[in-house]
Image (cartoon, rainbow, N blue to C red; front, top):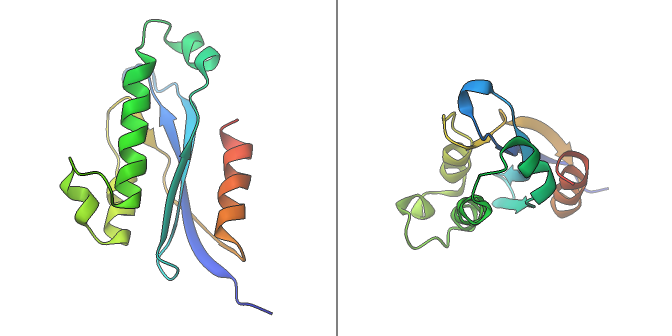
Length: 127
């Protein structure tokens, strides 16, 4: 039987008004140092976001989430963070910040399949 893989994950949140601390889950990040795995999956639910902030530019949110995904992949040519080692990129992506795109604190766990885990977390927390 294969050994379980240690991973960490964080939920990506859209926070329209930081001072109110209200948020909508818009994505998930899964990281495994041993497997050199770092993936982001996101979805912008227009109706849910408009309920919180009807005047917010959805294209702005999408471009920010796309940049996070590219940083996770190491393919964002506009960000030096893309050149960091994989664990440094995960720590940067999950660092505490006061912007409209934030993440939960990282949570650890063990799994046999990181791709299935990403889908499971995405379904449970985002859609």
